[in-house]
Length: 390
Image (cartoon, rainbow, N blue to C red):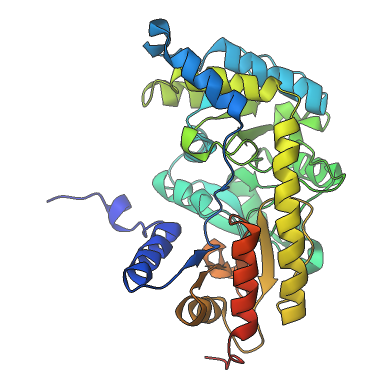
């Protein structure tokens, strides 16, 4: 059977490999605690699924959606940006509905670059960025994100040729996997760099509302003139616990939005209308449900953060996301320490190298289990025999 070279050369999605290992261990009777995948375990707020149920009973809502998504949802996105960020968006030309922002990442790459074009990617960064470039026949160039620089890009370290050939720049704040957060200045620098080098900047804002204390994550579109060179991807998956609903959006530069819309209209017919209506209600809400969820994640974060540092796994206290990015013990690699935790403690974490070569020396813990299970994680980590480097 003939299979394309693109698929042949594509590695299996890293998180599906962890799920196979988890299944194998569970079949052997091991109580596995999965802190590997970034999927919130809290329920979708009741008012959201109540709307879904009601709207699903209406026959008219079972027809095809507008290819760009319902105007109701796009207007809700625009209203959210105006209220939350002070950003004005035209729902007709500057907002597009996505079937989850993961597909939006791949489609914006396909809509902008040609084969052989360069895309600048954060390293460590979400693996889908690199796979999206692979699918489009592009070239990935890593922008190292290091602790010493606050996990923000240092554009001066790029070669002149890399800047010249680049068509897209990906950013992701609050960051997966590092949990790094920024102030608007970082986006100002990105917009200036994009404008100077004729590049489209894309901020993946999946964790924009998952923040702690008084921190408020900025939008790249708050930068003056950002819509000339930038778009932003948004998702309801993390902020409203709607991962399986597959609903998101892309906003910003109207030419990029039009290009992605043209591509998507030939691939899908947008999302189920009742889901869009429920998502619109979520974005128009007072965000009380989001704040309640964040309080749960903040409590989990504090518990795990304190314990990891006591155990000797150095990490910083996050201001956002559902992750903790921790250094592995001396003498271990990311992979060897992850394997130790899995094999001897039944704990799944994600090795930093799953997110790029600059993730070496780190592992990512997810806050996606209850505090009781986190207590068990902490107990197992403390009971783990003094590890010897492998």
